[in-house]
Length: 432
View 1 (cartoon, rainbow, N blue to C red):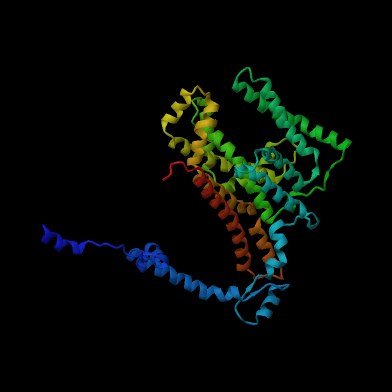
View 2: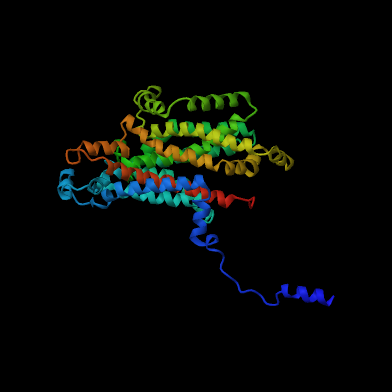
């Protein structure tokens, strides 16, 4: 026993080893490079090829961007300053930034779209972030009417008369609530529509004759640049989501007539290019209106863009509804909830959470598609870039304008994608 003990005791350590640094390949930058860029032969080849492409872009475009002219009155003056060297002429952005942002909006009224933009961000805050006080949602509801009056101007009583149409619809809904939900909805829609068609105009005229309050009217053909892209894009995004939800629910309805109408609408809109709908809004829509009716072109485009986006949104939300387990519907029935409460409290929150990537993807596509309005005579940023290049001072300028336009579109679209990622992380409950 003693011999065995004496032979093994030398293998037992009676002191602790000092803490040591991990190997160089298992820490810091080297570990990150090995795991993310050189984890295998294929990743290594792709990494080296990507570095080669980046280096080529830097050596080819870098000097052009670094040698930039910002102060010049024309392309000819830019070239004189560059004196034969390669360089960018971003002086065109400094000279025409107001057109790219506001189009032909009167310069003395630039404060109106700027204020509308600031108020829009304030109105979106309680919708996008739950930390913002819920009472601000009242301002979010009122902002579309405030924003319209700031941008177009005219009588202040016109947006108020439109708002009163919703008030009339709500009163009609409450007055018929005891009959049935279908009758209440029909009464609300009918009351709102009748007010807008027959009473909104006379109310506006009567009130303006008594109290002529308002801003100077700005015609829609003065709108242009990113102003028109934001107006059409934000309006289409805001309206397409609720309409898309209703269309998705209608497509899953057990009522044959309602389901057929929703299916026909969705499939028809998805089967027609957006440019066709824009031409319809520009040329054909007036034929369906009463003689002498003047309907603003931008509002017509917003309606068509909203209908187009709603059809795609309905399919995205229908995918979220289809992904829910049947047990969620059964749980709502077990709690004794009626259809609308079940949708509002149980089904729709989960379906929208699942559909967030598709919803944001539709929003981004819609915002970029606003550039198609150039084909119906509205000067979006692309249309204005063509007009600027047609000027003798800047005839021949090309890349600088499109880099600036692309950068602004990227900022808007990237912001939407990052917010969707934030929302997904916030709503994640599986802790995986």
